[in-house]
Length: 400
Image (cartoon, rainbow, N blue to C red):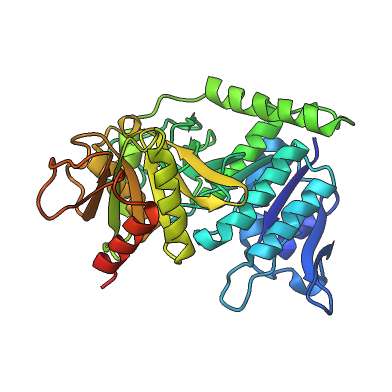
């Protein structure tokens, strides 16, 4: 199976080591600003250490070979990448029959999510496998959290300075589709040779190398790419699930919560919708979400089984999760999502007492006039107010 890695840089030592088996490319722009992929220019190769060189090493030590293609995305003067460059690189991989892509970069800006969601969907339709690393700051990460992409992070619960019990054993990983942030795989930082992985980027390249060697080795480049590559993705997921170590996800919750910076947006409005997953409340919640988004609010909707970002492209992005998998209360769960996603508005399904412990302004929408919450909670009936009326009332009351 043809493999590719997309990264921000590569150094001279890594380039020389892998150039015999790896085609080194870069995203470039023509005179009109149109993006295309071309050969990597000599002056774009780092003289010293590089993030991409480290990831190449982590892949090759597991896969016992190198990737077929390395596509570099040159960062700007602030060291940041452009989402359109990343989409160009991903589309190049699709066009050149790459079966598996290792991506140790991404974005936490939800405004980039729509473009990346569409790119991931194209990869899925082509039958490709995209494996991407999560943000090291434990923020909601694109494309790592997107459906169709396997997201990866490092188990940091037993690294130096942690207050928690040891997490994954040496050389192990944990796979779960019921993750709080759409990141399915947690990788042990301690490898079987007792050396260490230091970041989510390294963990991603390490896991992709493992998958290539242990799961997909020997798979031919089938002419019928779609049917065969979809089978490969199913094979990858089932293999990861079968070899997954048991892992106390409460540790993951506690570390994620403790490691997120304290300067997150605390002024989040929580809108509780009774029966959000039932008609007509689901439509009602969807309309509210659309109205907030059109008015430039970042609105995240939380359902009993998970959460979704605003509508992306032709459909919503769902990252399924359940508070009980994290062994935390509903209030803790919502506060964790607030910290990871940094929304302005959060919609969640109200079912009785699950609003307990939420330390944000709350609006309750019900199918009748309930008085089950405190007096400082704005309560409105969905039967008496349209989504537009509710939106206007909420904005007028809480926009100050």
